[in-house]
Image (tube, rainbow, N blue to C red; front, side, top):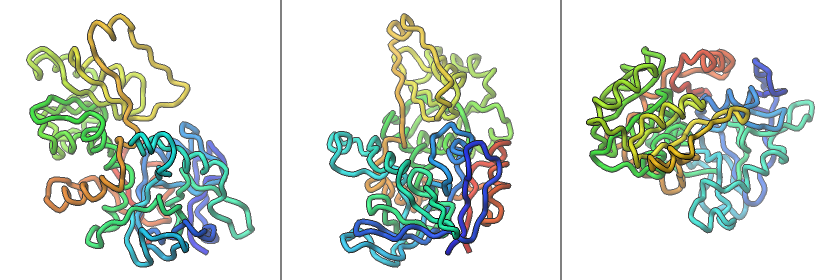
Length: 362
């Protein structure tokens, strides 16, 4: 049996931190992983409050890394002892989205997560795993497509962030927007994913990077990761012209998950520019675009799910950027905590007092 953080019902503000949870036995195409580090992402909070649908009771967590313990008889990609990143949106390889070359849209395993039991409690109660994962547990069982081998020299705390926050942010820049050298970029939201977008824009060679965040305490951190200018939302419209010779930004990224943030990003984009929506807003929150302005201004609005990433391709790329000193992963980790501190970590998320918290299992 292992430790795991369980959400008993949607709306609970406290997780049940247990030590009697066991993952399901691996099948022929499955891999059992000992989780060594797992991130605390805002999406986890969204699962708790119902913004993201999750079958409960469930072990939360979807951003993690660990060591392979056991593999099924048909698994050839990894073997016991390998270090792996957990991929919360594995691609099946055969659906229309995968065949089309968009594995990040594959919903095969994600949909299965709503009906497939992933753990059992000591009293034999069935538990599900958030997004089919449940990385807030010491051991998990994943389909072979849900683990990505990573080099042994990558610390587990860093590898965990390669499973969600970093690919979501960098991928939005590299894969979705394909930012070119010299482009101008605005990023609305400077949390963990927003900082990864800022880093990606810097790595891509953007000439001007504006970070927009109401929390001025985050502004120096945004500058550390590559922002050339920082403002609070009320000041964003005023700097649009001076920073872009009056035309607006080539790319405006929304990384908050709110309609108001999308509106800010839309205003910051130039005519013919691009608005990239990265944040996940509640399904009840609508957003209205002016149809006339949409056509006349020639702006495009694009969604970026998981940064358009294929982790099999992108994790090695991100590791190479880290090794080259171009990708700062350490700076994203604001708190290293133990399993017992998870409820405190959730409260910090609610208060927006953390960038990325990482649970390190001892």
